[in-house]
Amino acid sequence: MKKVITYGTFDLLHYGHINVLKKARELGDYLIVALSTNEFNAIKGKECYFSYDQRKKLVEAIRYVDLVIPEDSWEQKVHDVKEFKVDVFTIGNDWSGKFDFLKEYCDVVYLSRTPEISTTKIKKDLGLDEESVS
Image 1 (cartoon, rainbow, N blue to C red):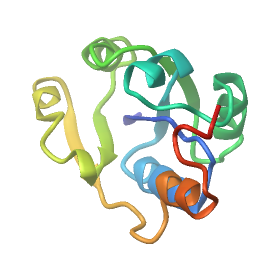
Image 2: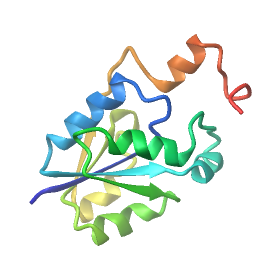
Image 3: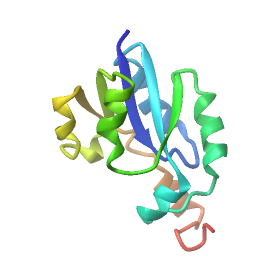
Image 4: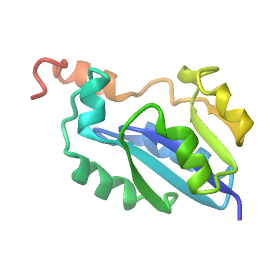
């Protein structure tokens, strides 16, 4: 069985998220999503609209996803790849080159995103900048 892992916040779930999760699942037989906790997002300067538990329930309901685990830090990726015996790490191509250090442990694939949609765009279109989403 070929295992794939991806990371993300998946707040304000939209069809771009579904597209990237479908592409990730097509890279293997089992998809693990490491979902950023609200505490970790705060460290990254992001604030979520939905709680971690709400986002986890949404992501778990997507048919391409087999397992959701928490992402608590930048440093956990090597640990996760080893612990879950991951064959492929994948993430959006806006991170291209940033996770090449994982090639020592597994294949690394940068996926193209759906260009016309993003959580940032949704927040902007709704007038929900980072300060107003509290």
